[in-house]
Image (tube, rainbow, N blue to C red):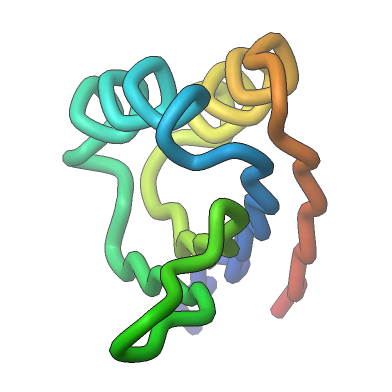
Length: 88
C-alpha cells in the first residue's frame, strides 16, 4: 500500500500589491520547485486594477520546506497567510 502526500494549500492575501509584491515574488521564485499550482486572483476591469490580491499555492515536497516557506511568508509586511492541510 502506498501513502499519498498530504495536500497543503496556502492562501496569501496581499494588500498594496505594488508595494508588497517584490519580496513575495522573490520568495515564490526561491521555492518554485515546491510549488505545484499557483493561482492569482484580483479585481480588474478596463478602468480599475485592485491594489489587493489573493494567491493560492499548492505546495509539494518535504514538510520542512513547506514549513520554511510558510514561516518566511509570515515575515513579509502587508500579507496575511492561511494554510489548509488535507491529510490522506
